Amino acid sequence: MEIKPFYRKPNFYETDQMGVVHHSNYIRWFEEARVHYMEEMGFGYAKVNEIGLDFAVLAVTCEYLAMVRFGDCVSIEMSITQLSPSRMTIGYRLHNTQSGVLCCVGESRHCYFSHHTNRPTSLAKAIPELYQLFGSLLQKQAN
Amino acid sequence: MEIKPFYRKPNFYETDQMGVVHHSNYIRWFEEARVHYMEEMGFGYAKVNEIGLDFAVLAVTCEYLAMVRFGDCVSIEMSITQLSPSRMTIGYRLHNTQSGVLCCVGESRHCYFSHHTNRPTSLAKAIPELYQLFGSLLQKQAN
Amino acid sequence: MEIKPFYRKPNFYETDQMGVVHHSNYIRWFEEARVHYMEEMGFGYAKVNEIGLDFAVLAVTCEYLAMVRFGDCVSIEMSITQLSPSRMTIGYRLHNTQSGVLCCVGESRHCYFSHHTNRPTSLAKAIPELYQLFGSLLQKQAN
Amino acid sequence: MEIKPFYRKPNFYETDQMGVVHHSNYIRWFEEARVHYMEEMGFGYAKVNEIGLDFAVLAVTCEYLAMVRFGDCVSIEMSITQLSPSRMTIGYRLHNTQSGVLCCVGESRHCYFSHHTNRPTSLAKAIPELYQLFGSLLQKQAN
Image (tube, rainbow over all chains, first blue to last red; front, side, top):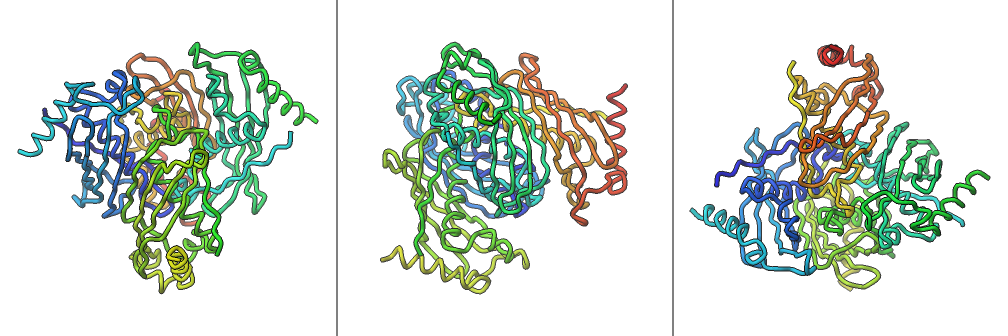
């Protein structure tokens, strides 16, 4: 499993009148990074939806260390920091690719929500293949 | 039917690095104005959804005449310019409430989309009460 | 200083395909609540900008306890949890006004950024009047 | 001048509770397409900003022909339909890359706004190199 890093150029409409990317957009970029990583792992998020699941967001945190501007390019590195059949915690590190500066670190906590039962469910039971893929990613990080 | 005008203060996150409200947000404000007017008419849009309908957007136009900034307040006046059982065209006029300047005029064209059939439908048949309310608004404008 | 609570109806465009308000929007609502409270305190944020300051966001956290849907109405209660000449921490509690359910708690941490020096600055020195207002709010909460 | 087409995967947060991409986002994608094309032409929009210009939006139109969903991929083809020293009109055609279906056509009209004078300006005078590049694109389309 070779995962290409997630690169993102800020959009003009993501800036605010301070002349920098508005802080709320980083939360959206984290979501984009999740989607990118899952596609790279061979199990796209749209497929998860088709099976009838969503990764509901339980919490997010985001620490802003350096501003990002239109014209910059950033990379977002994602890692799984906790994984259980019912929960997952994901960490994010956002760098400016030109300067190498770490601009932001964040985290999101998720449960797996079933469209069928309208309740949280076990990912290990609902999509064992994906649960194993996340497990491999966790292991790979450890090495 | 007495309809209160729709007032809106631009949010900081709606500005861009030009120091003004980003043009895409006006399209969203038009939607807010539609929702406000329907609530004022006594038939909220959430109720339309519950019945199993959506007003799909077929087209939008927006002409930007003067910039709007954070700290301003705007009013959006909405009018129905065309109404048929299968289609509706809505016009918008956005004024700066402090200066009185007309900042933007726009239009949106809609059909009524049924969740049940997954196809366009007749509003006159699906929700006759609402179709009549729109008709009264059209008439009221004419007078 | 009597502060009216901040009420907000979710916009249709703030929902996602899960049928609920997308989690990133709460971060934006926190900003709206800050702007509302400052206006209620008699010192609007646009005035802060005119003086040449911005409240840069250093960090945000948000815990999602119950989903919010289009058609709901929420209130956001804001409190100052830490205040110093160079930093401020703000807490948020978002309730569904119909059910009374607590849907979300969050926090944002800020420094005061000067447009003149392009550096963080002391609010106590830059706008003593506003610093005192925040101090009174902090005190009022304690009582 | 060989220009790579602009490809875009809808983000999850760009969907609404109808289960499709919200119509306001297409206006933002048009902007992304403009930025992409300029970069491909070798004169990025951030460079335009550095020189002290912005392409202010005078008007947009967008016709929605087929819905776009999360999991789809779209291409946006951009063409210059009118060009003068003081104005530019740009056309957009958005296709679903999997089905080939034309999902949306749109247009945006611009003037060139100078940060130095705070007024509209001539692109031909302000950035002759870029004006020529747009001219070549217009010519290339004609052939």
